[in-house]
Length: 377
Image (cartoon, rainbow, N blue to C red; front, side, top):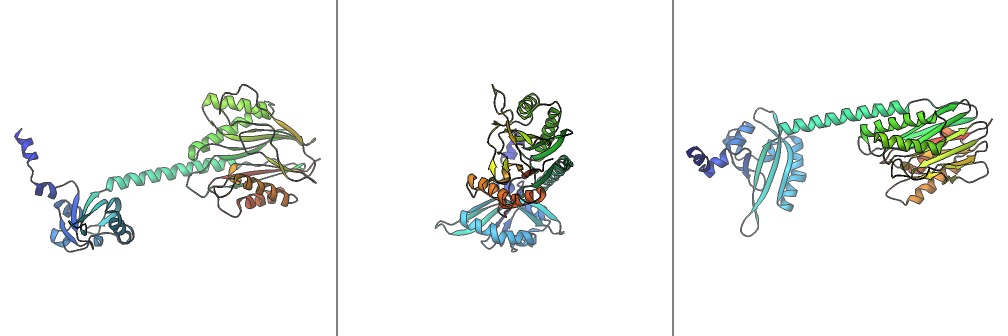
């Protein structure tokens, strides 16, 4: 037990000098009054070279600015600062990543007297943070490439219709979102169009988007109409545990008759404008998001007949949802813009409606709008 007793009997001076962190006491202006051996080892400076200098002089230029603008004011205001990340410049000019904790010492009258600071080496932590950032950047690049690949397919072309898409990624954050669109031939005279919104962001959302996009195409090839197709997509989502709470609107258009069959799974209602009629939302054929709950009844669908010149717009909620205005105001802007630009080509209309609905502001959510103009035969 003698060895253990010797450790316990370490003097306060030994505990201070050889602590596992650098320690210093400074005056209120940062002038160093006392340091321990660990700080000497961390900085490479002898004690005599440290005492009398100001602590902030050991920091990089950025660290000095931060010391003056944040560190010192916070210390005076609340009496302590914790885990401030700085780079300490050593005697050899090398930068040492460090975490700094400080406490303001007061005298018996409560007046500030000195500052006690501990300095922890953070080289490994900084390296770990950099690795995390690199991993996040790689994941973002993969997700962005996956998203671009999924959304880069060509749209169907036919004299009987115009198709156009306006897609605006969110400006907040680095992760890609899960908004997607698709348009494809069902047979020689029918097309299917879909706009969806997957919950979440990043590579998981992009991968889910790809799975659901492929599943919609596969189910559409079996001649399922929109309502039954969403029922089947529910089963797919449940079996494979993918896309829960995803919203989407799916429609099929017959180019000869102008008949449009539509179903929405928890998605914003498509809007339609026809010659001589004001723009309106299509509220029929609605049901819950994918795999939101066990549904005892079949999903409904709606049928309308488009006259030549009519335009249907499918979009995600990023087009109209904003925290600084009521939801209805955003929806009203969509209809007003659709009315104002109804005579423009589909590609111009898609961009103009998006711009008007966003009211010139950048969005914190992805925005996807697909415009379908029925020209007629």
